[in-house]
Length: 572
Image (cartoon, rainbow, N blue to C red; front, side):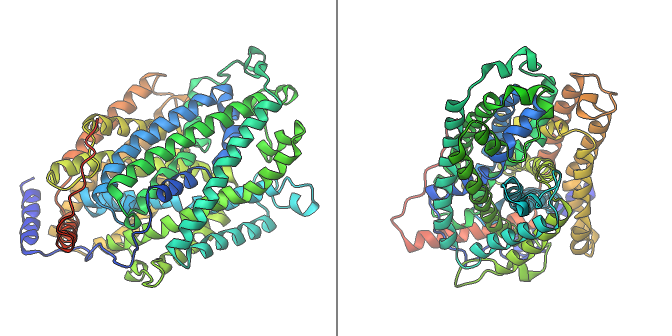
């Protein structure tokens, strides 16, 4: 411990001398602050309402029956609780690719890299997932060629080619300018909100059979409440609400991040929740009784909402849904193509990618090398995971892993940098943060073994990249990063073990009795939350960023002496 403190002391001396062993400045003046609250809310809502609403209602119903309604509510509560921790971080550090930076600021390179890797995997895989969703919906068209796009489980070679064209289209829209992206996305988001609302209303009006939730089909929760919890993790619900982080990743282009980020994040989650519940209710009541003869878990629609529309004579709605199956996922894919490029930019500035990926085109404000890298990675994901369901499962667990650094980082930075400007500062954060850590851990456990183990293994695949950049450093320089990141590595190993040994209803071996497994996960979350907060340290990246932000604020003040500081939103 004495040597560890000594290492930290050496870094403190470097802080005083203004030196840093990390990548240089984290600013990039080529980003343009043009996005207001409306545009950022559209970014968040546009990310949330993608392919999830097209497939999520059916997948949740297959797992949980009518109780799927509660799965959406639980998912929203989890997302909202975690999002509140990130709104404070996003307002403190209004920088592009924000979600991949916060762990680095609070804990240094190891924890920061692992969080960034998990977040990037979760987000970049959404892009091919949205393209896959569009092609799957197209496969139910009444044409011979359309039926050859999807074989019932995954895309065929023809379907894969069609999805690849869509992925290229997403990136093409992001290539030219952020203003073009904003204008295009605002228009698409309006359509994406109107069509789901119209779909829910039309289906409810056409057929509302309350007997579908009766005992003849297994009752309200035919597969038990454990299935409801699993639906949150693997039915695309975590995927659906994951879009709240898109405004945070584009904070570097927000005009007034302190005010607009929390409004955009919270507002987009709440609006989406209303839409998703309406769609779930409409789906549950519109399923023909004959299709439920074998129970909810036998449903297997190719295009769930469109198929029900045709069943009840709403051909116009089916045509609209077929069109929206391109527009909604394409809008989300376009947004994620933008936000993932900013994330790559952030990872490069953290010091874990070549400098070329940090370049931003001065004319358009677009990080074009990062866009190209994500395009290549999207093609790889598209080739490996060809079905929407398989991608949704991976995205769900990877997203939760990336979430856990937010609650730890926000309270760590309150300890490390208490005087740093916080345009958003919730008085209840000391309570919200550990609850968010508990929720994230529970969702990871609910995802069921062996999926949790597989995704944690994917997290380990990224460590050689970190090792390439970090292990060449002197031991005295590297050790504090290892010590501060040990909690996260250990946490993932422990969660994998608990998932394997947990209740059989969550895919485990049954060594933990039902109910007690939840208690164990909660205790694990609290222990690692406390460890994570206490292990944070004033690493060089945090110090450099503090100086950079202070200099930027001073420059802004000298340019406008009469400008008043932005009031803090310190409401509980």
